[in-house]
Amino acid sequence: MGAFLQVFAVWWDSYSPHQVGTFDSWWNPTYIALYVGFTVVVWAIWSGLRVPRIQPPSTVPIRFVNLAGLKLAAAGLVLEVVVWIWIDITRQFFFSEPNIASAFSLWTMGMLTVALGMVIGLTIELGMIRHEMVAASTCKRWLTLLCVALTFASIWLTTSGVFLYFAEAFQTSSLNLVAAVFLSLVAPLVLVPAKRVLPKFGAALAIGVIFNLVTGFVLVLVARTPAYVPWGLLPLALFEILIMGLKRVMNITWAGPVASIVIGLFFWATYYPFTLYLFPWSSSPQLSLAAVVLGSLAGAFLGNLTYAGLTSAVLGDVTG
Image 1 (tube, one colour):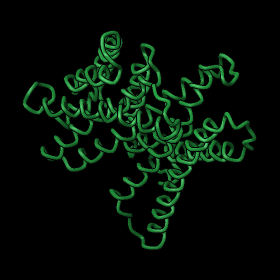
Image 2 (cartoon, one colour; image 1 turned 90 degrees about the horizontal axis):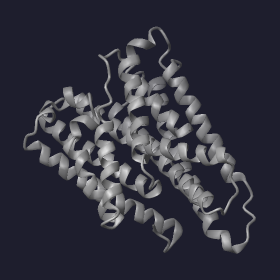
Image 3 (cartoon, rainbow, N blue to C red; image 1 turned 45 degrees about the horizontal axis):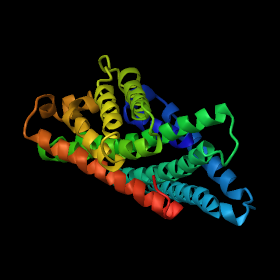
Image 4 (cartoon, rainbow, N blue to C red; image 1 turned 60 degrees about the vertical axis):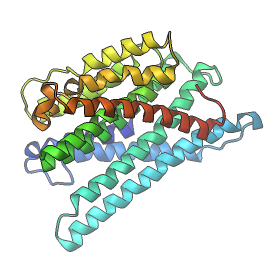
């Protein structure tokens, strides 16, 4: 929850300068939300790492997995703190704004590392619940599912936000095309592993709903843009239908990349309405469409490799 709140606060802040009004730049509503999210992450990591791990030898891999996720999240937290201190020192003693691009990149890396560590731990926790290795109430089962979806959505929002930020900042056709390719790569990079973790129908769509709720909030309620229509849910629904059908005739490793083609074909909808002012070409098929389709395929294959790599690293030979 804390990892998601951090990402939500950064998106909110990116579109709300005019709403802050006379608030101090460090104590406006968006930064308070960021501080709360940061505090929750600190509390979660500290609470997890300080619990004694007295377990039989047979459960050592599970112990290692949970600690690995927490330690990875802790490393991301340390990076966030370092960036925070650097920005504050630069403002206080040099009376100038720090290098926003580099600070933003490092902060993004910190948030991504926190989210990745959390998703590893949550995924293992969910697997333990499903295999009845730990007792869990129905409420905890659903809360764990919700947190897995929130964490995957956090990774998608963070990575997408970076490319949207730079594309909007520079506004050149060549950089916009590069940003578009990376944006088309991001969605399947997140959703393909998510479908491996949450194989039931609707998982990718649920993550897409969270993504669209956040973007809809910052665009409509914060930035006061025209009415927001979540067209991006349509390609995600097609992705769900395709991947469920393809799983019956081919291996899941191939079903994900094939189904992800629809994300590239409907790239303009997946990131609507950003594509309308950042990438006008995306509203009508052109040669650039091939680039985003290939980007989606690359993201799907990378997603499979990431899932397999993390699974091997934390569970040894156990896959699937």
